[in-house]
Length: 79
Image 1: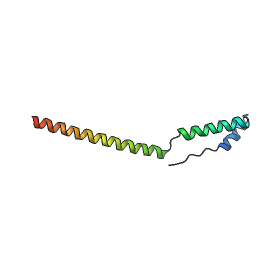
Image 2: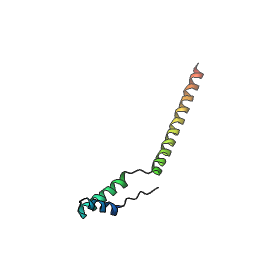
Image 3: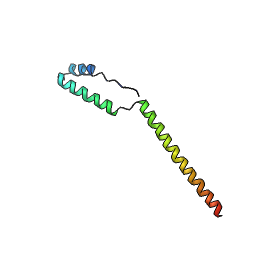
Image 4: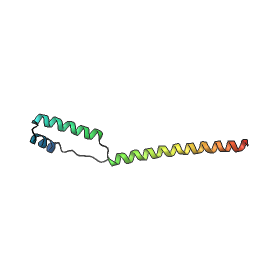
């Protein structure tokens, strides 16, 4: 799985340059890093989830098809 990097040092420097204190900038940068790591989805993760969804839908479609064939066969036998 891909890794996304977030340059907290550069971010802290930018925050300090616009008036944040060192402590404020570091806390803010760390929280931003956590948000990015927790909520950012990579292309690889999306691809994996798509494959899982496709597999699940294929299984369901196969089940519905088998059930439909059974119903049609039962109706043909009755008539």
